[in-house]
Length: 63
Image 1 (cartoon, rainbow, N blue to C red):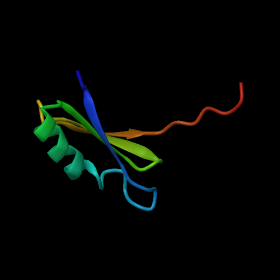
Image 2: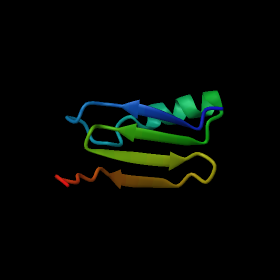
Image 3: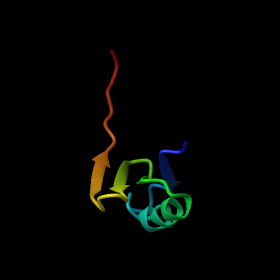
Image 4: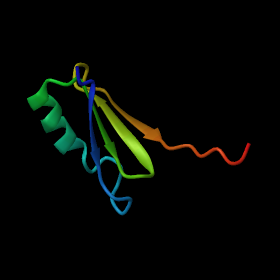
């Protein structure tokens, strides 16, 4: 059972640019969570509640 749709764009675009496209796919496929990603950060939308979250990519250097 699919849980999410991820739409990826290059990092010359804002992280939320693909969210509308991901939302359309999510509604067609009846999937509750959609993400738009540009390589630098994520935008997540819950299609059940309509809430949108900006998630930043974190880097951890050397251990």
